[in-house]
Amino acid sequence: MDTASGAPLSSPLSPADHERFERDGFLVFPSFLGDDLRTRLMAEVDHWVAGGVDDPYAPGPPRREHERVQLLMHEHGLLISHPPLIEVVRALLGDGFAYHHLHTSRFDPGANGVQWHHDYMQFPQANRSHRMVHAFFYLSGLDGTIGDLLLRPGSHATVVDSSAIGTFGTNDLPGSIVINRLIAGSLVVLHSALWHARRKKPGDEGRARYFIDVSYCQAGIRWPSDYGDWKTKLRLARERGLDRGGSCAHLFDEAHFFDVAEARRRMADDNVGSLIERFEAG
Image (cartoon, rainbow, N blue to C red; front, side, top):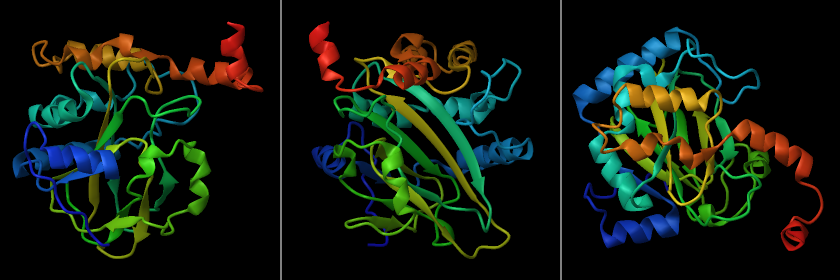
């Protein structure tokens, strides 16, 4: 299968949309962003890349306030609470959900691929009781060059550590699909536990692929935070008015999260033997 069919732009989503997301773990919205907005976003991506690309997962000290934060770019920040996007996410997560992170990238011809993985934040990986979603924006679309999006529909229901599937590289898996044709400005919304990859493709010299992903978490539990100085990022979002006059204040509430770095340290020390016995002892 070379492409995925688009889901209708409706709010709330239709029963068929919900059934498809529950079964397959993703929805496609062609031309979700208008040309003016996506052009402004692409200009900001160029600005970000020109300043040097940061690895949000690289080890190191917490970010200082003066370090680069993507949501401080005007259009990127507003995209987090973009009303049409918020309606789609609300339909999937319910009310009161949280913003987790925003990443922006430009893939030039020859860019490397990304192996199979998922992005569901949980330590240890134990269940899928609450949803986390990623919104993938393909600002310049996809045309079968530079890189294709690989998905394994239904894999979000399998509880596995992301590192366990990286060994597959970017090879086809049983039941996997390739999305290599998307109109500029299209949106793909994934359950964050869905297995996905980006396969390197030749061609399109002189052009680039512009990509933004924004992720959100369902309310009801505390989630691992974003990496770096996540509290500062949420504070900056509030100060910038990205909560749209308070209507999206739930997005930037620190109470949704615990510190991911501290959680990793604790897991390294405490994840020994049978965890269920600790519950019984308590």
